[in-house]
Length: 61
Image 1 (cartoon, rainbow, N blue to C red):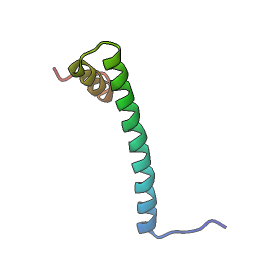
Image 2: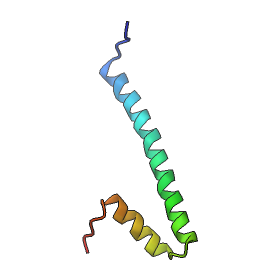
Image 3: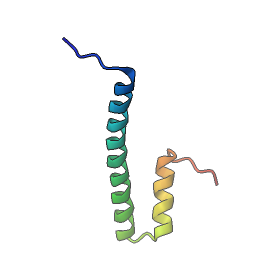
């Protein structure tokens, strides 16, 4: 039998799961940023690459 939770508890569970996923994504972005800087890109270039990646490669320039 599957447990049924209130909508409020389900929302809290979902938020906790999303928070964990956001932390993982942020850690991966920081790792990529660090690797780009280590590879010779300056900080601005590395940040631009990260932001472009988040935008799906589309630039608003």
